Image (cartoon, rainbow, N blue to C red):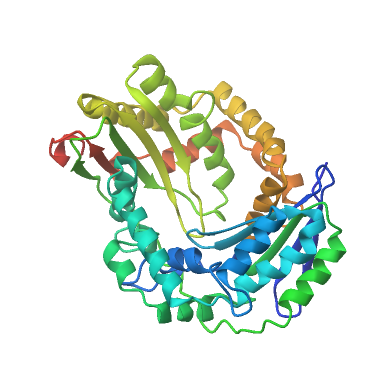
Amino acid sequence: MPLNPLRRTLTNGIVVLAKETRTTPSVTILVGLRAGAYYDPDGREGTAALVARVLDRGTELRSASDIADELDGRGASLSVMAGRHQLTVTATCLSDDFAAIFPLVADVVRRPLFDAREVENRRSELRTAILQDEDDPGAVAVDMLMGRLYPAHRYGRRPRGTAQTVDAISREHLVEFHRTWFTPEGTTVVVVGDVDAELVVRASARAFESWNVTRFTEPSMQPVAQPTTRVAAIVPMMNKAQADIAYAVIGVRRADPDYYAGWVMNNALGQYALGGRLGDSIRERQGMAYYVYSNLDASVAEGPLMIRAGVAGPDVNRAVASIDHELTLVRDQGFTTKEIDESKRYLVGSIPRQLETDAGIAGFLLSAEFHALGIDYDERLPALIDTVTLDDANRVAYRLLDPARAAIVVAGPYRKPAEAVA
């Protein structure tokens, strides 16, 4: 059954998407703003992440304790997360409490106080999270890999920043970030649940239509340079139990015509069943990986196609060689018809599961709006996947899966020089 959400644009440019579901007496509210980590100023990486942590800690109209009491008293929840391009505010509540919780969400979005004490408390929390990441081989490998793969692009920066950049962010910087990037232009309000769609539009107009902030600037989307050589780095962490391998090549933009072929190809490579080609070779047949999978992160610019694996230190060289072998084999010989057909069936079959919950529907609708895919995207998506041919998948595999242009980082109990995996 198609989602067929109601879509309206308010007079100030905010897009409202409302989808009625009647399975449970609850509502999910999701507000997406084009204010993610990509918008962090140079030298103050982590600004969006800190804004996300402070945003709900008091507004001009409500104290932090007022917000907490209102949510707790109604059994509602509210969370804020800063992604690469979007910052999202998510709330869930009973349908009877929608009229009370929705204005609170709008207040958090529009009028955060950025209380100095809350800023320092949340800065301390963010710094602790950064230090924890620096002790996690998986996080270390991914952060360093992105810097190697995108050396001159904002995608190469750490979304949370570093302890040094976070310490350089003042309360005034948070206020400036909010004033500059929290604007009706680039804001989408999605409400899914047991609530009338027209009521959602009216509530959105009351809460948001008086918000008139002009977006004066927009950072240009930097071109992504394809690596011309293979690069590798080793981060010895000898007290850890396993080595984490991050291996990536430049992928595709979400708007690339090859996106769907790339999606099917990646599923066959490292996601289907027990992990596609990579899982069958490295984990099942060779038995040397705690985990192995691949992920195609198509975004506004060309995101990475990243392979992750966790292995014992002595197996690092063999695991990297196996990844190289599987990618070369796919480039030279391609996938089989069976692999691609099974991957397409799996992806089409997973769509209803993604849309089983109000939160799943809300996230799907927000993503479709952000990438301008249309409100009927859920109806068109199965055919977009199903029309991918074996030749399409093999062509994209040949285009992307080049070990000679890969970036590789190993973090964990492994001391050999980078040349060992380069």
